[in-house]
Image (cartoon, rainbow, N blue to C red):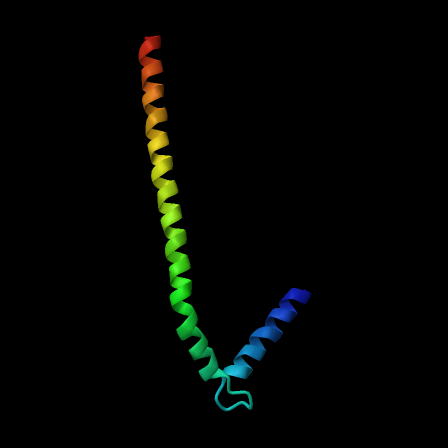
Length: 78
């Protein structure tokens, strides 16, 4: 319950601080932050995608090897 209330308070503060008609009017600062941060964020996301893709390829190769081994053992048992 406390976390829900805190979440609502923080979202309210975010909206309050970004609106141009409110006294803080931090919208332009947030846009400047995103302009600088988004290229870095996209690089990290790309790096994570590369690691996930490499792990997926490795898992597929191992699955093929296991399937081959299984086929060989079933052929030997016949």
